[in-house]
Length: 378
Image 1: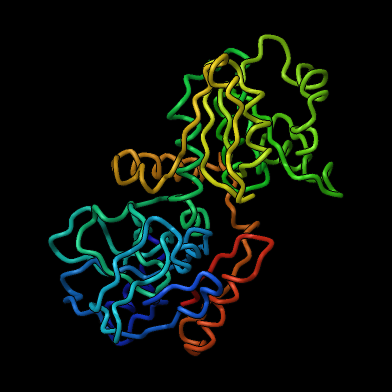
Image 2: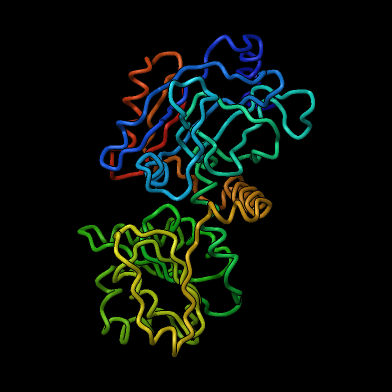
């Protein structure tokens, strides 16, 4: 029996006794995107008994969500008057975990109490409830907690697809990948997945006072083979004299994962073997990816971008398979849930005023130094 069943039954017994509450926006502001947000209460225009009704469990506040509010992200939801707002508006949020609380009779692939996540971005996850017409719009998950579920679509899928979709790995050899931003959520998942495949990882992190402590955790807890600093990454003598000893005999560095840009990206690219590939999936330094011509001419370097949102549009079934495989690894305890790392911001659905909820979300947008996750208390 699902752990959500009793709460779902309470919802059904009350039907739509409470309004949906969604964080909406009708304009953009690149200087302060919190200004464009408002909390809007409404009853859905579509017949609820003919819709799949989802109750939100948790949603992260991702950089891409903020970029959408700023108006600088290339993928954005269409603004509409369907919610009943005065101006055409969209619901914020691309990612989240939901509980199914109502399933119409014509839907056979979902049951009340199931945990699901949206298959595609622009779903509008910053909301207390959402509806959808068909089970194909969501992916059912089993066995993983809400914090893992709420981050699979972006971090989990990005890590899994970058590792598995571009390189033929020799699990019996000495194959390596190198990645910058080694403390990021994606990088931590990459190292865990790579270790399962006997692929070694060289993770680059920023220089810091507690470097040894951070490096030790990445290596012992998350399975990174070796962690080095950005200053080591950029040091030619280190690459020439120390790195070969780290990599060992017959090492092949086949893949570089870049989410920083600037000098960091060129330094990890220089460590690749011939005919290797670098995938750029972020640009935290806001500096261009600069690569010397020699890497392309003499080493056959392939350099391309990775965007999980576009991949999902082009091959939704691969996205579905990826989500379910990553969820299985979480459920089996082979991947570490982010639940102990995220900063949880609690939305008390019955106990908080609209103004308090809006302030909570604004805090999640502006508060730095960790990943913010909004968890709904029902």
